[in-house]
Length: 166
Image (cartoon, rainbow, N blue to C red; front, side, top):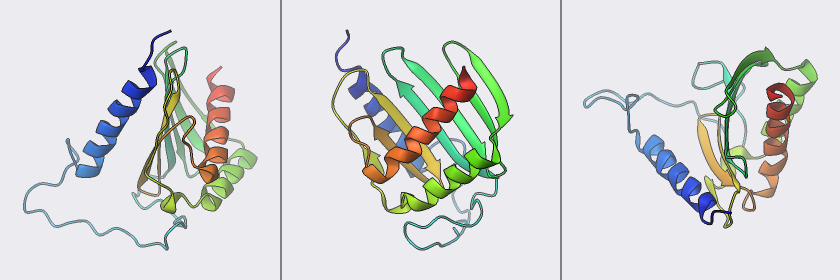
């Protein structure tokens, strides 16, 4: 078994999160451009609508484990989703049941997502690393270091990936 695989994935994820937070890449504002105001919501609460305006409820990336999985799940506010997996190759679209969508919205609202630590790391090999984006906030978490309020959210998203990805 390879040692340090989880640490390498976490470091790569932290670098990506840092780049995103710093505005690296094609989406970075151009010099002289006026900043875009962000809608304000109380800390820890969920906005009533998607502040980015793209209709996305949550983005969930999961990477690692013994099989070296790389999954990406994007769920829209209306319950529509896209699921992509690198190995074995998979690209699937569908719609959550209303009960699944409502339960996920309830969990997200109750998680205090906006107040949780942005980085939740752990030590070990073959751990999963999760990157979640919700309400324009990103969290990078790793098995063994996930804050208690976030665990049910990750469990629900993992269940959705398993249900619709098999």
